[in-house]
Amino acid sequence: GKLFLRAAGAAVDECFGAAGSTRTDSIMAAAPDPITSSLSIMRRMPPNKIEQNLSGLLNLIPEQTDELLQRVDQPLEEATCSATGRKYLLCDYNRDGDSYRSPWSNTYEPALDDGFQPSDALRAMEVDANTLYDSYREQYYEGGVSSVYLWDLDTGFAGCFLVKKEVKGHAFVSDGGWDSIHVVEVTETGNGKATYKLTSTLMLTMSVSKKVVGETNLSGCMTKQKELTLPVTDVKPHIVNIGSMIEDMEIDMRSNMDNLYIQKTREIVNSMRRVTGGPKQGQNFTANLNAAVAAHGATRKVDG
Image 1 (cartoon, rainbow, N blue to C red):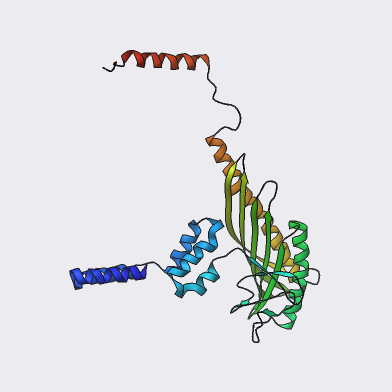
Image 2: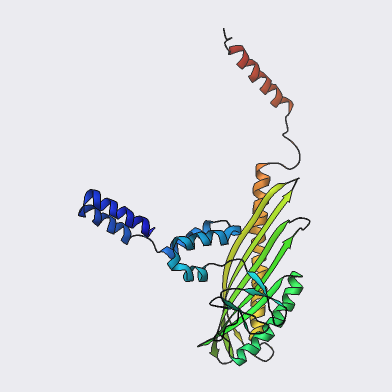
């Protein structure tokens, strides 16, 4: 946008002088913020091409790379911890430069000497959270990969809870993916209570390739927020409170995703074409159609 306006301004100056320059300056001053425009574009692009579209935007405005990478959620990528052999997920919350911290070994790969590390108490909570969230993933998803990353804040701490599951060669879905990203900020309010601000993003992609239906892709992305103030006790520590919020949020978003994308798509398709039964043509309809055709033929002029 800005480079185009500068080039346009130079051309106007050459043709019309200072008067044209004043007009161009006013246009540039009214130009929208590049981040706002980029986010608006991403919201209108197909969710299954997030990485491709984001790469195109970064090529247009490379000076906004860090900001866009933090603001735009992308499908999660997997890596394997060299120390434990366990898989973990890569995101902006465990990245430091070009290295990523494994939640299982607490080390960066590639190795990084001065990489960010959570405090000892928070690291102990992070270990417990990964163990519990891994069990949660296995029970709800029956596969996939999960990771939890925590970091310290001045008024408490924050965390990112991730789940990714891919499906290939399924009986109904040839290629699909589920990525859920939950970012929670915890603020200690005193009196044994804490405020939890949860922001959840769900990305769903399903591709179907069959002779009976052809090739189709159904993709969607949804983001929701929730804030609660809950008591913190030995029975219900932070991990239990956060886990309950995430579980409720995922159930709600799963239901909304089903109603918004699956059911609505089925309703639209069914309204355009009947699945069973053809058009019903009664005797009156057929007689009227034949009479109209005969009348048209009687009034038509013969060529030649």
